[in-house]
Structures are given as structure tokens and as C-alpha cells.
Image (cartoon, rainbow, N blue to C red):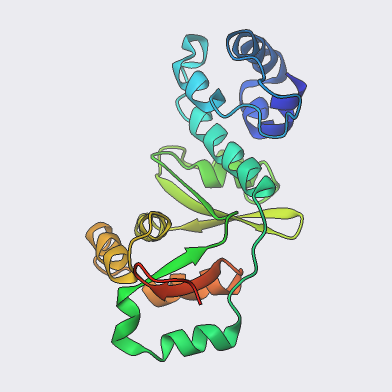
Length: 213
């Protein structure tokens, strides 16, 4: 239960410590740890919260839990070297050929999307913004990426989230862009591309089906 409280501190704040520990006790009995290493214990906890009837009066804690577990995964993901600037410039110089390329993203890059304002709710509990000013029924998305010993939570559009999802599934830049534009016709590809490179999230670019250079 202490491990769950460390992974899901905002959820604990939202529901109260006593309720959280009671809920966690039920979860631990149903899904005990399979490993003595508890850093990533609780993968099923968000789904458990969503189905936990006593917590049903408020819908968003389960999605906040998904965000917090995504942060834990990002924190403990393996490391990888980001693409050097020169290599990126060489890739961009390929022009239209680049559309048929695939992009390898940093292993710590995660994404979460919700019909609730989970990013603003989480940020308010970090001292960024006021919780009472957050409309919880506003959909929000975020990318999560390890930066040193910290994990960044970067608010993005639904189209950006879809773009990253398709790249992570091994699709080409052209296919990922098309999918993003189905969500948002005015999808800002250059802005997202800059964000990903600025935070070291791009590790390699190579032709579809080819070998990473």
C-alpha cells in the first residue's frame, strides 16, 4: 500500500488518505505484487479504481491514476541516445522522401489522453495553477518524457497524441501525419516535431522497413 501511495500521490490527495488506503488494501488482496521490486507495481490500479464502486461518484481519479502510472513507466524506462542535430538536419534535407521514413522515439516517451482535465488536475497538485479553477470535464492529453531524474508532463493536442501513437506503432511519418490530421485538420506538425527534438525524444529516422543508420 505504501508503494501504491508513492506511485499515485495525486490520486491519494484527491480521494483522501484514509479512503485511498482502504481502496489500496482491497487492490493488494486481489492483485498482490508478483515481484519484490515495487517500482512499477500497480499497472492495473487505474482500471481497478474505475471499477471500484465506492469511488464511482467522481469519474476522473482513474484517469489521473493512468497519468501517474505513465510517469512511473517513463521514469524507469531504458535510456537511449537522442538523434544529433546534424543527423536531424540531414534527414530533413531529404524533403518529400522523409514522409516514407519511420521515427524511433525515446523509450521513456509515453502518452495519455482522457476526457477529463487530468493534466491540469495533476499540475495543480504540483503547485502549478489552482485546483478550484480547473474544469474537470475538459478533455486533455499529454506526452511524458524522462529528463534526467525527472519526468516531464507536456500538454499536447489530441492530434499530437495520435501522431506519436502511430509513430510508436511503426508507421511512417506520412501515415502518422494523416492520422493526426483526421483528428485536427490544422495539425501543427512542425511545432510537435520541434517539441520532440528539443526534449531529446527522437532517437533515429530510417526508411520504412529499413535498418536504422
